[in-house]
Structures are given as structure tokens and as C-alpha cells.
Image (cartoon, rainbow, N blue to C red):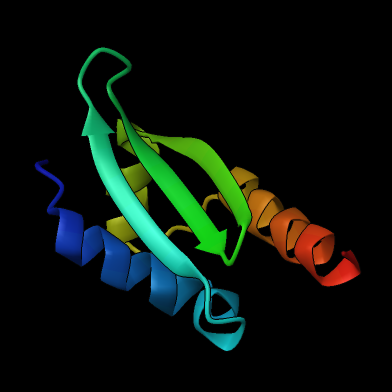
Length: 83
């Protein structure tokens, strides 16, 4: 399955409403060497960069949440709210 960047961004925002709720900027790019999507979340000076394996991205488009990404998003929000 080919993953469309815009479709993936939309699905991530749908599955993880905290992205919109906290007005986080979401950036996506595909790293062919890692065979993974690079997910960049930012708000002001705070930034988190993580990856989403191709299979996880495909699963996401099918409606399957990626627990690892959800934990990363929650930790990022906790960190920037504490500062």
C-alpha cells in the first residue's frame, strides 16, 4: 500500500485530536533509507521528531492506532506544558 502524505497527516490528526487541541504543528516526510515516515511535532520552541514505520503508517490509514506514537505525543504535550 502506498501512503499519501496528506492522507496520513489527516488521519493522524483525526486519531490523535490532542494535535489540534494543543495547536501542534505536524510535519511529515518519508525517509526511504529508514523505510519510515519522520513525524515532526512542534509548538513554539518545543519540537519532537520521531518515526512511524511504513507498516504502522499503513495501519494508521486503516484506523489502527500506533500506541508508540500516542505515547510520544502525550509525553511531548506534558513536557511543553510543564515548561
